[in-house]
Image (tube, rainbow, N blue to C red; front, side):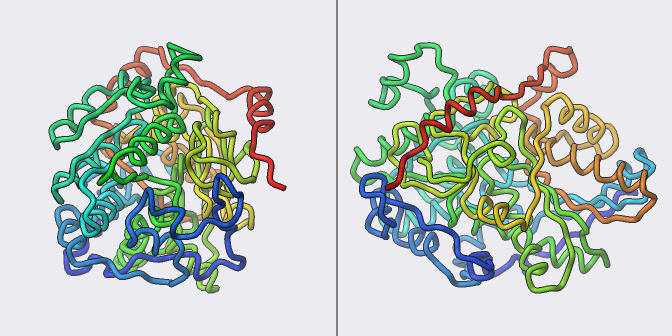
Length: 451
């Protein structure tokens, strides 16, 4: 029987966790895109409100969650920790498998954890409109929801291939009052330049970020909002792991391995960083596995270097594992994992050997997702399916070795708006894609040169 561990709303954490305070070495600072010198708060003021800039640069271990944000969190938090007993039985494994179900939020994913916080801080700063990008649409949906709650306008540049693959994500955003455009567009100079070179461009998160940044810079009262990668975004997501720590105490268990999918890195950081804190304090020997698609292997094949976060080079330079800022990945269905770079904090942790990384092909992920559907009854997002794939692999390895193991993975969202992807899988039309080595080498040659 499936077991669910649920906390009452009074147990919603009162602070986000900032891993910067506990890392054995400090991460490299962001650099100004022009001077190549460390970026200060004034360099970020064109994009973000003071509250988020403070969090981005903070070294404090815990940052208090505003009560206004916690009140909105009560709509869906705390999210349940669930033991996947039916999946365990089907695998005939001695392993215990748990997952944190973030798909119960209004937008159907983990993204509102930071969207609500970002909308709140922008509202407090007097901002009227937020511009953003979105890949598969989870982030755009979350920000549209958050902006609607706090009375902000919302403009979303959605990667074109996902815009057409996932039309109902656009519908959801529009229901919350957002305007949504298939990126690249003719609305921005960045978009026009891309379309001039490739009128049939499928788009990428790097392109959509350029358009959203240009939109924000060019309009008074508008700020930019990012759904992953940056420190403050990862910070907000740690509410996932903080809840999970308390729920594991209820379950009288503790994870031997924590698994999460990675695109920009926010959901993995959210589930992993609080547990990594415990390991760095000598309280556990937990392993941490970040799972990325073979079509966009930034951790497993990228370079650890300073790079721009977008194609048009508007953003500060970030020290991260990157495939190059003009990298255009294949149109895989896990649109949220199609980003050229990995969050600096995750990149730093990986470079220090604190976490592991593995790349998996999409057909194997959908195969795992189908097994999860038939046992646990939940249709996972294609992004989450990457974590499920490795969780199943870890459980089968435990079976082969005859050892007990406790596995935790982050179910980042449901896949009820991704059924076209499942239809492609069931009809045999889904293909695997591994990004060619020569394309990666070509992108590496275009990385910014620092003197």
